[in-house]
Amino acid sequence: MIATAARGQRGVHRQIRRFGGRWRDFDIRILFTTMVLMAFGALTIYSAQGAGPINLSNLGVRQAMYGALGMALMFFVASIDYRFIASFAWPLYGLTVLALALVLVPGIGAEVAGSRRWFDFGFTTIQPSEFGKLVTIVALSSFVASRGPAMREPGNFILSLLVAAVPAAFVFEQPDLGSSMVYGVIWLSIALISPIRRAYLAALAVVAPAAIFFAWHFMLEPYQRQRWLVFLDPQSDPRGDGFNLIQAQISIGSGGWTGFGIEGGTQSQLGLLKVRESDFIFAHASGMFGYIGMIALLLSFAILIWRCIHVVEIAKDSLGQSIAIGVTGILLFQSVVNIGMNAGLMPVTGITLPFISSGVSSLWTFLVAEGLLQSILIHHRKLAFQPD
Image (cartoon, rainbow, N blue to C red; front, side, top):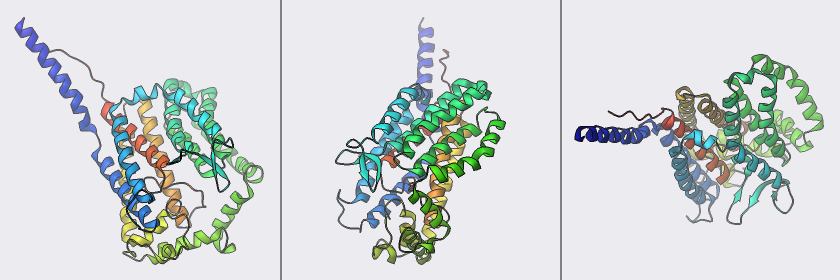
């Protein structure tokens, strides 16, 4: 009896060690790179606000505070099995769609510069479209995983499109063309690793030009079409929509190898570069840190995306792989589009630069997304109790 009890105790101890050992799969490189990007972002926002007193009135200081809270949230999400979180995907999806609908209602959603995208809580604003990206990733991943090989059927293909299209339609109405495009990237990222027939994807590619033609003439607002035209030739409207594109390129080019320091480049110091704490933060950072700093920033993003792809490879099930590729897709897309927009390689869309641009909604969305990635790493091995 004593021997049996001893064997049972050793078995329990082994399971405790295994439980704690799961955190050995925690990717420290994702954590470290994210902390570097967040510190870079907080400092750049602090500079963009004028590098004044260190208090909560400065967006950079608040960004650092939100970052610390978001890191705690990331660890909390990482400790929970991602499969358990996915079991709440559809209730969360329903609440997200409801929030996206309510934000469009005058008196409920806050309107800024003609767009109604935020809930104003006084001390901060929340943008539901940002959290909606992550919820859509989890919901769509759950849908694809539950259907399995049945995703080859046309009905499930259409349903998967609707999962991303419904929130995207509400976001487009805010209006926010850039964020609505992110939902399309989510669907495409997950579709590419799912059992969906490639013939369906080819059919979408065939009808895409006609859809773009229709959207250009009947869906886009005049100012949205103007942004695309100015992107092709900023000098066509140098005092209007092309002004900030021109100033951003000057700011990037004038930074030299090491930049101008904490005060930023001349375009920022003279107030010529607008929205430099969010949309055009890369241009402002270029004025601060120069080419060397921007190379370091790009390298940091490359390392982070590489480690996210590693999670896709490590995941043992369709759910984990789909969540990981969805997160990787929006991280890569938003980084490329925002930096390309600043450099004049892409049209102005208002898409944030992950972990860098000001905004609690975007910051927390990506931190929770990383928590899900860490959860996949930590919980991808099934624990089985095997008595000695």
